[in-house]
Length: 414
Ligand code: PMT
Image 1 (cartoon, rainbow, N blue to C red):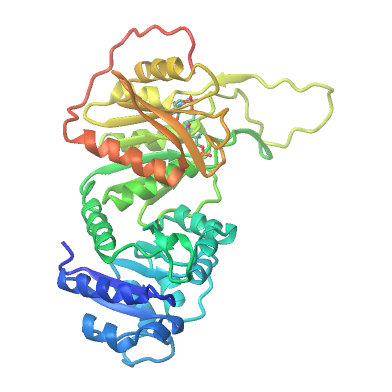
Image 2: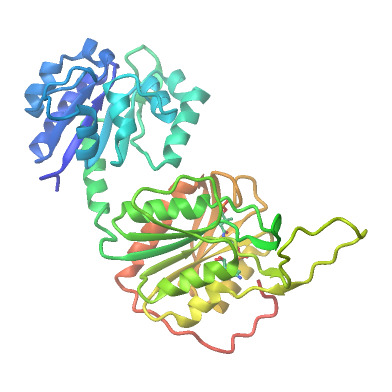
């Protein structure tokens, strides 16, 4: 599986650096081309010669120590990597990469790389649990960095707690499953919608909602990581576009509908995570409305329901709808699933703390036509995206498509 893969192994200054030597050896034996970058701290624990002998490649410790005049080492390594793994990762390197600091060979190469990054932290339990470290890890998770959690046990500093570097065999398993997963959706086209639609009243005012796009962006990034060709149709957000994802910016529900429908026939999977305005102003003024009357009545007209339209048109596509509910979650979710003819419906109770709009986490229940599939407790949107894609990929092989049954009669629309 690792044959032909280029793996950059970053080693930072902790006692667990000795375990990185075993990891380097296992990666090499598995057929990977391994390139090691050590921080100055790491060289105090293990010598570069150890890694050079095991990897059979030059080891990098200094950005300015260029061995080959025909290339710039940190850019070359950043570009060539199929995977970047840091083991062990100290609190210091986590802080640097979370905040874009590039002051040595490892942090500079990490800033330059577009490759997926996997991090195996190792440190004292209090350093690990410190809010600064936890915040830095959260920032990195949101950027799609994958963590290999440290183990609990006796630490070199004398404390007992969480902070031991994962064993090299466990890290190898994570790396192997990473490369396996990156083939899961190869050849599939995934379309994700994200963010709240913007319904213009006049050039300076609009109706929208609190959707940040985080849930949809996490799904797009994860689908891309699994090898899919991903299109993200999203409204105005401040989020970085996940690497390798085709981005289409839209404003209104009608714009979103046009962009989604024009791609739907060639799409395999759709995630409708966007919060689409149900209504838009009947009239859109082309000049700023001046303040004059005591009251301003804006008449609204219903927007097209994009998800319902997809549900009616779908043939082989696998369609995942979302529902933002505040009460009667199960009943409303099942109602939407049937009315909009989705294959899965992810219902988040947005009245719960840590769920729904704007936050980095979510809480949801997943339904299919048979009923509840899975309860997803409080977790990061990144982890939820990962789990949702596992559920979808598990079902794709046996998915033969379904047809829309006309005449469903439900009292409360949404
Ligand atoms: O963006 P975040 O801040 O990360 O927040 C995530 C989220 C809460 C927005 C997301 O998890 C979510 O629940 N998205 C759907 C929100 C919503 O609009 O729910 P709804 O119950 O109003 O709509 C149900 C489904 O129909 C949704 O898939 C929606 O995209 C779709 N819909 C609704 C109306 C409409 N006119 N067209 C649609 O396609």
